[in-house]
Image 1 (cartoon, rainbow, N blue to C red):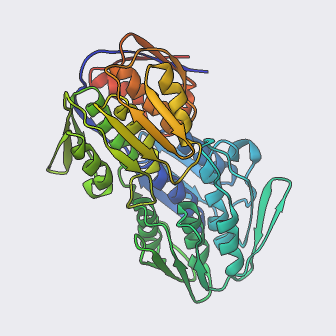
Image 2: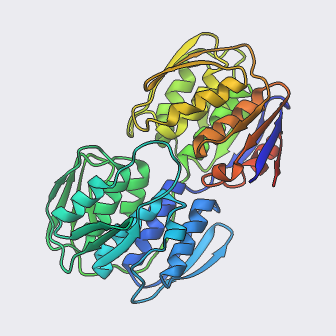
Length: 416
């Protein structure tokens, strides 16, 4: 078990580069199984979840070579179709291998996925989509088994705009006969990036980024070189870090349109944000104003940034209300922030945050990836020393978080 030790060291100052998006890299890595040959992917973050996904690809027969943030893959004509439990249990995105393998190999056997315990994330929408396309899907001994010799395009309505289900069905439909229409599809930028990658390989995907995605089946896909979009959640975390320390941080390699919900909310709280030449500069304010937040699927406020915002709102001058509409366990972060002196009351899926004058260092535990990042931010602004245990959870989604924070002036060290 590793932990971060953090001591307050004043405002963060400086400039950093935002890495590639975890939630775009993982489905695109899965989608490489839909062709054969050599593929080069750039801007791939060197994080635990990506390392696990690359390990799964190697198990399935893919040759993997990594050089910093560039990954070279050689996909064989016939990859394996069964994903080992020992690897799949570590990440949620292992379920995306179902759609990719079902499309090209006509069969897939993938364990029920792992990942952070942030709430119910059932596979029923994924399975329903595969079945509507004509696949036979069974659940046995903790594995999802899918088979389909020739999938047929169809209309699929998602009861909830699930990102994973949208991605899985989109991949499975790429080789289906005829046209597939996904209604009430998720609109996240990472879905658009996956669609762009598939189209670069020769797929016919239209409407990604809207609530109706249409996929016209093709015979085959070809290998390509591709660069992943920047990580809007990493960018948002550093924006909030600048605000909570009353600092001034410039972020490079960002797409501001992906961050509009956060930009709007931080501006409402008195934080100054300037955009120029593809970068964002965030200037904190001495008086953090309270704000109300409701998490929603994109383009609503992202659930992945709700935890860091809870830390920031703990220091606002007034009462804020947070409503978590996506993952029911996300508000458990309040228990750890209360150890640091925060005044937060949770009722159901709503948190009432009464801002305090200061947070105090304490020993706390990262309950999940984003909650862990939030506790690191709280430690940056707290008096005394904060120790965030189970830092390995944080490293599932942030590349060298401690190094980047030190570069901005933070007093943070990692202890194994």
